[in-house]
Length: 387
Image (cartoon, one colour):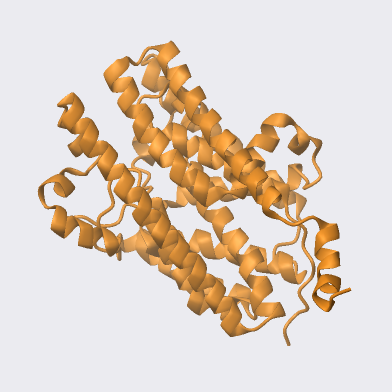
């Protein structure tokens, strides 16, 4: 028997950390950015990609789980298909603007380095083939590899969601097995273009983190407790995060100061991001558990102006993600062509983040302005009856 879905208010923590992840993605996509040393990847084995994918899965479980429980299977599948289509259109739209921007910059500044660095050289030489490959999600220039992953993972939920809402933990078993297969044999992965490449984010590995997020979202929606709060587990998470932070921070410092040793780097590297290496996954899950324990949805911190700015970005994750990608590549061009001094880097980062926040606030304001006042909506039936 299906559990009765409960009403779940919007959790500001989800929007806050999703917005923060989008800002980190913007910063991390700018090579040699002064702020690169202050994002998640500088102090942990994971980075903003894990945050984005996990919270996307969690939000999918909450949002689409309501449709599957409260309406019917067909309605839930239709909502998923509509979202997948929206993501696909957004990806193609950003791809066209991205490639046009890179092409224009290459011609304007006579710098062919950009086409190779940003992996659009094939687009400039074999446009007719690359466009088809882009439509098939096989051609993924630099910065444009997360949305295709998100599309594939959400499409997977067309099959899994009807099963996950009934037996969520059982569905995690095959998901975990597929993840382990990738770790042991470094296979499979989806083919990319050119033919000798594969997807940068291996969907067969990253599906486990996404599915875990979906299952946790569904469990919150249904009121079931899949993972009880255990203080011993929390203390273990604290230890894992502390050790990871010390080790990874030593690597970051070693990059700038060679006299500082990079702890255990010879034993731990390489740590595959493509296959979501276990160190990345464990570090992220420990960090997520700590945050869930230490920050409640009613935390006063979430009412501060900076947090509210991140929440605004998180509420519009797709819009701000696409904008952030374009701002990252534009910022990269600005630093290369007009100087990469400290002041210039601060200006580029400040301008990019400010634009992201301003656009988020504007869209939210516009959406509120479009809604009819409550009094008008109450009077509408009377007007129809001619009263």
